[in-house]
Length: 297
Image (cartoon, rainbow, N blue to C red; front, side, top):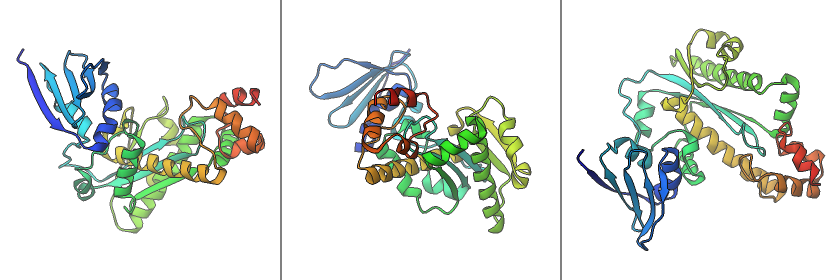
């Protein structure tokens, strides 16, 4: 097959995200032995991506690189026939420290056209810097509806429900009902809701929906961030999560790691400094991690 060579220029944010994006796309890192090459990756089909220190990216191989370039540059698809709808996603459920954040976001054609060049996608693909940039672009948008469950509230609700899927279903549906009620008051029609599916049982959400939600068409599927409304909700939720981490760090003067790995020793340090009872104010203590944290104190 004919070999393709494509060259593009990346900006500073795209360069920072480059390695993570390529790994998400299942490209494998290649050793580099040239002082002018920053990073290089090999695709599953044998293509080569070479990022130079100048910011120039060269893609070579027999495959079509259009989708890869779209991911790297964060360029969004065209949504000319978009139906106005709400998308819902959550972040923080896998982080030991920090809150759970759920966001419902309404989008229509006008809004999507405004953000079409920004590159909204699954927030897990982006660095914190990119998330903050995207979040700041839509922070003042009127039609997203967040819920932030501080760790202490999260811990109380997990104890009450005994099941994370039930907790998530209730928070998702609360966001949906709040959004649909607000849109109805403002005379904005919304007949569709898309959810990034988090439970094997789709009835988890359907059973919890209120009267407005039950009258809407509700779609649930994995990889829901392929829907633009869910993608925007995902990014907004993670932008809020980053702000909440900043608040926690400022309050306790403590560096809380994100995620669920590399948290045991910091958790133990926190307990030594602030006490066992205070841990439930900053961490999801229902995680098995808590036992390991307390075993070190």
